Amino acid sequence: MLRFVIRRLLYAIVVLWLVSTLVFVFLNVSPVPVERVIGGPRATTDTLQQIRQNLGLDQPVLLQYWDFIKRLLQGNLGESYINGTPVTSLIADRLPTTMWLVFGAGVIWFVGGVATGVLSATRVRSVWDRSSTLFVLIGLSTPPFVMALVLLFLFATKLSEAGVHFFEAGPPLQEHFFRRMILPWIALAFLMVATYTRLTRGAMLDVLGEDYIRTARAKGVSERRVVYRHGLRSALTPVVTQFGIDLGALIGSTIVTEKVFGLQGVGQLVYQSIALGDTPVIIGVTLMVTMFVVVANLIVDVGYSFLDPRVRLS
Image (tube, rainbow, N blue to C red; front, top):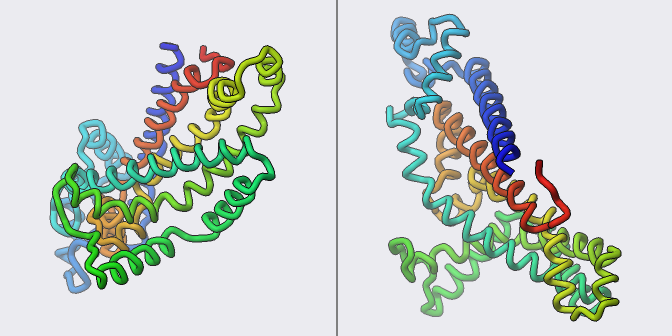
C-alpha cells in the first residue's frame, strides 16, 4: 500500500508539472500581450516596455520558465494584472463558497444517485425502474443553467410573492446560509443525480449477475445482505471513480451556477478574469483545479481496497 501511495504521489507531481508547463506556454502564446492588458489601450510604447521589464518578460524564455517554476514551488502564483492582489489571496477568499457549493451538491448527487440506482437495479422493469429511467432522461436533457433559472424563478419569484423567502444572507453553518445554498445545490446536482443513477444501475446489474452473488443466495444469505454487503461494495468502484473526478473538476466549473445565484466563488472569479484578460488568476485557478483532481483520484484509488476486496494494490 505504501509503495502504491508513493507511486501515485510521484505521478501527481508529474501531472502538476505538465499542467504548469502547459499554462506557461499558454501565457507566452496568448494573443493579447500581457503589457497591453496591464497598461491599457492608451499606453505608450515606453510604458509597455517598462511593464515588460518589470515582469521579466524581456528575459529569455527558458529563464522566464525557471522563474515561473521557482515561484510555484514557493506557493507563489503571482499577482493579478488588474489590482495587483496576490492570486493566492483572491482564490483563498473565493474558495470556501465554491467548496460549500460543490461538496453540498456532491452529497446530494452521490447519495441520491446511488440510492435511486440501487432501487432501480433491484426492481428491474418495475414502476420504480421505469420512473427512474424517465428521471434520468429528463436530468440528462436539462442543462444546469436551465434548472438554475427554473428554481430561481419558482422559489425567488413565485414563493417570495407568497411571503416565503429563500435568499436571506447569513453566516456559514447557520440556518440562513443553508437556505441560501439549497437551490444552488439542487441546480448543480440535478444533472449529476441522473448520471449517477444510470451509472449505479448499470454497475449493480453487472455485479448481481456474478457467480459469487448466486453462491451467496444459494447459501441462504438474506437478499438485503446480498445487495448491500456484497453487491453494492463492488458496484461502487466505478461510481466512486467518477465521483472523485467530478468533485475535483467541478471546483473550477461552477461559473454558470454561481453567476445565476450571485455566489462570489471561484467560478465568478474565473469569469471576471477571462473577461478582463487577467492571465495569472486563470493560471492559478487552473493549477488549483488540477491539484484537486489529482488529490481526489489519489483518495479514490486508495479507497478501492476497502470497497472491493478483489482489488489488490501493489
